Image 1: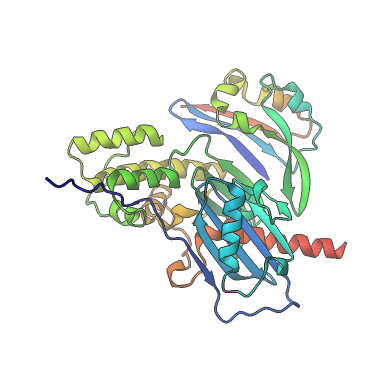
Image 2: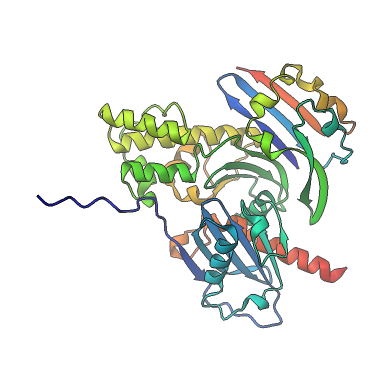
Length: 95
Length: 301
């Protein structure tokens, strides 16, 4: 399951997407995020509880500010580079 | 001079009800499971017998989640002859899911909505737009109802059921007529510029003062909401097997406009007023289905 976090507004479109099927809960992205915007959560997948990376509840609603600094690097952001499983993607499309 | 009575009509109030599927019976040989979906605005409960819907209830969420869960569970049990103890497994879901006292497990509403939509509309459903009381979710799932991708709106109640309630009160139009009224205009106006409930309300008052009719104002607001929703749906991947769930699935002004913006028709929904499954219970229904699967899994191991 891929969870998209982000926004679409007049400035453009920004999304950080985490694929919980690929995530191995290694925690590296959590450690590398300069904004402490990521955490490990329990997700219910195929009748099992799995520990996966997610954007924290607090940061979900203000991701345009949280990710503003890293955003222009797109797929070279610290979280994307930290993930060896390729579970995280960042897309920024300015309007 | 007699004082004019204040207008105390609650235009936002929508129908709370419960239903037992006629002709269905149960015994202790059946596996009875339940799903309780405590949303930000509405609470829903579904009871299933061997994986088939037996009863459901829809009510307004109060100020406290446990009380709302107890209330909706009481409603759904009413008229079934069942006791809480007859239910083998209960899954809680929705905004207040961690505070459902009778639940054996809490599961996020995403997984539940996809399962529920798969049951209501069949395995062809791929794209689900859930318009809840305080958020909008776009979900893409496979033929088993497993979620493949998911997106939630990034902020507040902009363009949600609660926003529509605020507008119902402001324009003095009963909430259940909002869709019809919004479609009664001859020409679609430009959408309001902001869907934030607080700002949209201010903008609407300005438009009314400018001489816009209530119909035109609500059309402009509904259109703005629909455009927002369409953006989310496009992001998770729109396929033509598309459905709308949640309270606003009953607002044809919303559904119609989302269809127009996306150029796709939603799959036909059962008529809940005539006894069909209510698209609003998709989350609770999915929770009851997952409750059954979890119970069977626990028995097997």
